[in-house]
Length: 309
Image (cartoon, rainbow, N blue to C red):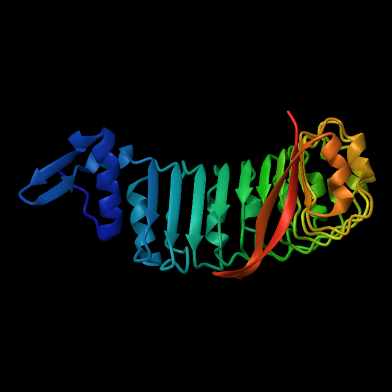
């Protein structure tokens, strides 16, 4: 009988744990050792490793598991991806690693879901060569340009918060998007979004937005606009589908447009008198939000939450 010969103790442990749940017959105990039958490799379809001791060179060992569909790796010890083998069935990839060059990912043409969080991503060109991607999440990276993303015509969910993006014009071609998160960037121009008729959830807090006119014809249900430079809300009045709106920490001068939006179910605002007329139509709650600082000296601000059934 042949057994898998592991080099990485971390991968060995994960494979044994995975097979033990549903395929325990593929594990053989010899004395104190537990061995994995060679045929067990084909039953491994998921791999989740959270361990900083996993290093780049260990990734080559994944070649023994050609049926992996979902791969999640979280390790500060992974600094390059050159050792990643071809995994022809890979559909979902989640990374939290210390890598700058993601070009090795271009070979995974069947990927549908990619999440790379807080991982030094600057260049997304390799990801733009993966046409089957439907969900792409690149939170907390160092992305300044999204040129090429227009190639991803099957995208339905896109998350790019906490980057350095100013120009979102490439998004104009992504007509299948239903969810878009762009918080904590440097965006001021929303014109690329004006024809996104399938978009229902849009998160734009902590940017430099002043003009909401491009959103007039959209079918949004949730819109987050906290911490921008918005003074006028009148462009939102015509969005009949909108039911959740976040507008805290903007220099809004007139709250009356909100009274012309009877479809709204919940609104989050500053705790200022300009929004008090909403009390006639909504139930008001007062909450404290943390804006910064370090425990126990947090910087807090009061906000209102107006809601109705």
